[in-house]
Length: 290
Image 1 (spheres, rainbow, N blue to C red):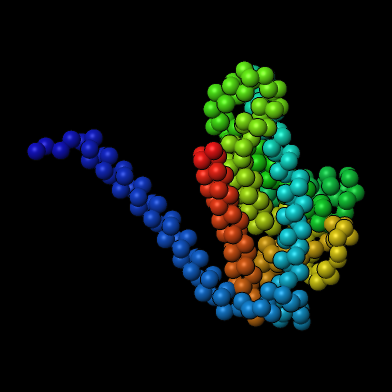
Image 2: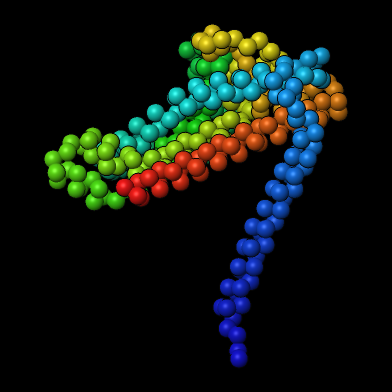
């Protein structure tokens, strides 16, 4: 039986795609195994809960964990409400036309801007112009700008996936536009919105360049209380890892601590991804049942 040339090309194409996918997966797996193996040897309760000592050659990463938490909290409170309300306006209220298309194009282009550009912009806007100084709030707002395009795009896509009949039925029964959005649209769009917001935050939590210019410190073991902590500099896991891996005066000596820091950061990001998947599953199951 004669095999058609198109069939051969199709099988060859699928083989190449599968090979590329498995190759990428293998590389990622090897990197993760190396980090988990070497980083696991440094992980201990003392490493998690203590401050750096003796020029960061001993001790732990607790100030970096706390700093990452506060910066992420500021990012959430800025990026999520602004992103969600912008998406609601663009999808539900704005008159669709050239202007809205240009705005959407600009938002998608901002998603691809290098993070160091956001860092320089945040330094100029929040640190110098608004005089917030090198602080947690400056870094959090900068990361919020970095996350905002992701949040807007994912929220708008989630709103578009809600059937138009949900809106039309509610409006036909006499509900207002906002009542329709709040009761009949947002609950069903919530899984996609939360997933996009959490994944955007996970990306921001691993960024170094934006916080490098806006408040991250080489060594800042002081843990201020709220709200004073918002006005002070801070340590953060990604910047701490950068310092330990490339800038420390005894890189060979602190390499195990750098692997431990990398492991904690990866676990933190994996936990955020698992949380996003769990919330998405929960809301899908809830509203599917209802």
